[in-house]
Length: 576
Image (cartoon, rainbow, N blue to C red; front, top):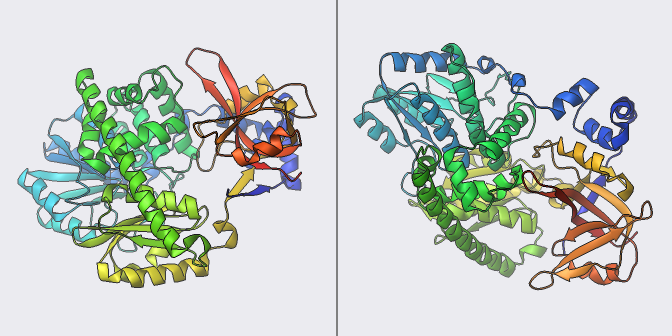
């Protein structure tokens, strides 16, 4: 069993002063003030704003470079009745972005259609083949979402055919930018846009926000589509800060009250009907189903579902996409097992190498990103998984916390045909004969730049508390920290010297989990907890000896119903 390093960083002297100021407002719900300071909150006013996200706090979309150019070109296209194509990636972020922009503009304009490339025939991004299709259809403007920032040659080719591009992307750009009429990307060099970590769908939302402002359109219709933005933010794992958190908050409210018809069909299909939907539900249930369409078949079906206006059509599409997800799970499991068997044979667990590169020409292209994530979690090393597609070794890389895998891949760019992504996930392709040299140089870069602590699982503890502090008021205030994600993770607590109440037991098909009933020395209350895959600790726990736990506080909650509280144990230390 992998033991993580526990990190607890007490507040600095300056932070303690801020904490004391906040504690005067939140004294009854300690340690809320400590949690707020850790999240960069510096006053009671900021705390109130954090606890009550408002769409009024969204930034002016015209602060983004080229936004005025993008809106002007779109308005001219609509005024001249030009044919418009909305184009996007086949993953969750891309399909939600296309669904949002297409459906919103469709309310005001009919000469518009959407296009999602197939992962297997066309691959990631824009291709000359698609541009030729657009030209045949008389398209004069393509709005490309969640991709396009590196499509210099393709966009130049489109310009030669009289087709303009507006790029809405959030991936890291190169020094040389494509010759588009407008590039909306908060990561552009020199951009001062206040929230640089938008999702691709988030960039699309800001574009539509600017379009609506320029045309004097009210906000209600666009804000009703924030459920799509919330799904993209959760699934693409962008930082849950600034306006991302505001849009996710509003989007979750929409998901729980009156979601998009397609999303409502997915919610029913995956058994979330009647439950309070959280960011975690989007990450583990809703997002994978939307993603499965592009992985196993065609991302276009996901957009068809997300723009559906007929409940029967939406239900049928949701059932089909749910089956894709079941197929994806089986394939994912099979390929992960095959990859792990190869790595075990290599002795990877004991290898001094700092990275993993693995290639099998028979693996399914649609799931290698997931497999890369699984290998990264298992071996705690940056991982690249490659397969053969369209004559090239094509794959995905994933990273460990704190290590920028984009820079590692970028260091080998002369060996690559194409690559793109961000710090924790990169897609790439190369000639098969370059794999060995890529592996060598990728390892060389990782070994020279990764820190030892980045290769060890870490658990960051937000506060050390006693069970007596887990009061109804504290749990209620803790809810206000939602929605959680990178930059605003669910608080992890540590309680020392807890003991079994005498009723803890092993559960699960193979008795691999522990259902705990715990007490500590500060109160007589018995706290329920669950420790997944921690059966090896049961003997120590059952003996009545004390141990330390780190955990998150979970609520099982149905809409309009009471909730039950349970600790989700992340780690156990028996040396106390």
